[in-house]
Length: 138
Image (cartoon, rainbow, N blue to C red):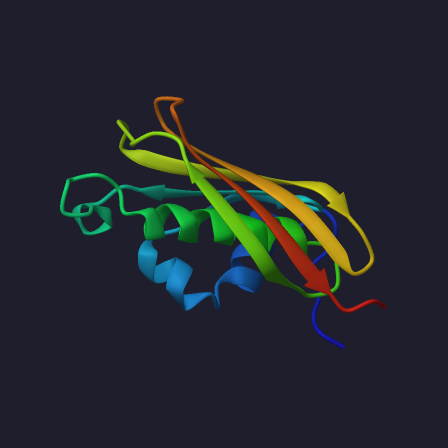
């Protein structure tokens, strides 16, 4: 049986469990908080996150949102994998940090439906991601 987190893990437990996500770590994603059906992660915007126009690359925004989804859908649940995601880019960031907050809309035995809002540290809405995850039933 795969390792599972409790419903309300500490920040140390979250970092230990999700610390093996090398890509999120490489991009600069940091865990802020997590509980069943909820995850918050952030990233300081660096030059390497920017595209040719000077805006944050969409892939960096999506990676942050996907990492928030990983927290929200895997805490206190059997392991989940994303099967579908759609992203709406709403605005270019004007801040120095991105924050992704993911919450469960409905989390069933096999399917979960999640929405992630990505904002910057000025409060500007950057993107919205809707995702569906699949998990093995117990």
